[in-house]
Image 1 (cartoon, one colour):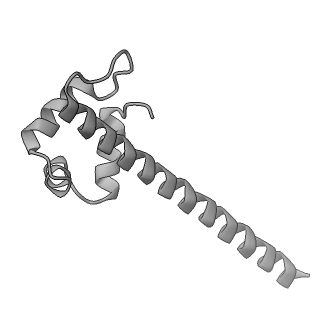
Image 2 (cartoon, rainbow, N blue to C red):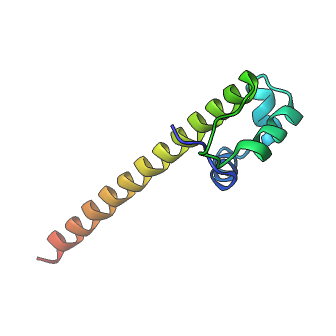
Length: 95
């Protein structure tokens, strides 16, 4: 699982209609620890965080970002299927 970028984390938080402070509290972390971890490690693929807590924070953020992206792609597929079905129904009515 790749380390999420600050942009990906921000998008995930917007989709969940929350912020980093609320995410930290919901996951049992201290906000400043999460804030500092994101600033130091978000988007870095050259090495992993040194501390165990920072690794856990980035792991949890990566899992939430991945889950948000999966839900988003599922929604896109569902919309495309509904649009296709609607256009087929419209085409059939025109015959």
